[in-house]
Amino acid sequence: MKRFTSIVITGASSGIGDALARCYAEPGVALALIGRDQPRLQAVAEACRAKNAIVHIGQIDVTDRTALAAWLTRFDDAHPVDLVVANAGISIDKDNSSLDDFSRIHKTMDVNVGGVLNTIEPLLPRLMQRGQGQIAVVSSLAGFFGLPYSASYNASKAAVRVWGESIRYVLKKHGIGVSVICPGFVVSPMTATAPFPTPFLMSAERAAAIIRRGLARNHARIAFPIGIQAAVWLGQTLPGRWTARLLGA
Ligand SMILES: NC(=O)c1ccc[n+]([C@@H]2O[C@H](COP(=O)([O-])OP(=O)(O)OC[C@H]3O[C@@H](n4cnc5c(N)ncnc54)[C@H](OP(=O)(O)O)[C@@H]3O)[C@@H](O)[C@H]2O)c1
Image 1 (cartoon, rainbow, N blue to C red):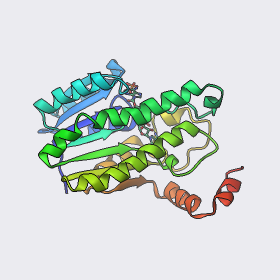
Image 2 (image 1 turned 90 degrees about the horizontal axis):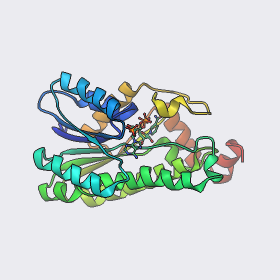
Image 3 (image 1 turned 90 degrees about the vertical axis):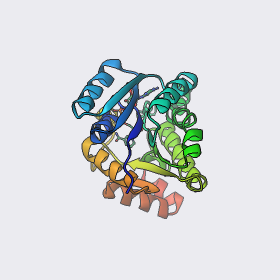
Image 4 (image 1 turned 180 degrees about the vertical axis):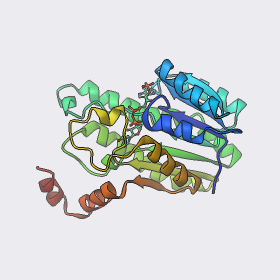
């Protein structure tokens, strides 16, 4: 079981990232909380400091590769990172509007894929040099096959899932664990605006506890809840034309 003492969380100002920060906050833990909304970040930081964690706030857009790298390396100098959770993400084509406006697709890829890479890139050489650490890539159970909504979101989550799964093999030789996190529906502003059903909706606190347990065990994939997992398994197992027909195409 791994215990982490210097933790980077992007997208810490809301939803799953917020809950993860609070879940890890305890004496002896340094947290790097990254997001764009200063008041919300500040509120999470206060809650974590109240639990006696050391907290640094980075008000940074994860698509800003240079600013993020500079901030993360400074944090790592002060508190050598042993867990990085690339969690920041957006879902802006739930209504399929991205087919009318491809800039939404580019934006989704920039944040959900580029942002993950920008988060891990500056820390990876340092983790490799130290020969330890854990990387968590936040994907989604929406990233396993095409769905009738959120095309660019689903594609971005498939990209980071497969990337994370692949680098796990390489980084194992360097003593670094990689976990891909695939939540179903979790209560957050992201699901609050979903124009489709969100079965098996789970609280962010419960999701954070499951993620924490999986990361401590270096699980390759941390997927939940079982109900959505089962549906995804079925969708992947059936011939593509059956899955498409079941989903209405
Ligand atoms: N909720 C779900 O059901 C669900 C299911 C599967 C996967 N996920 C994934 O879990 C992750 C967290 O989602 P959530 O539900 O917690 O959503 P959320 O409540 O909307 O939070 C998203 C977080 O990402 C941050 N963020 C977005 N764009 C950013 C940018 N350009 N730069 C820096 N930070 C940025 C936001 O920070 P600011 O607001 O401060 O910019 C916020 O803290 C996402 O990757 C999402 O795709 C969620």
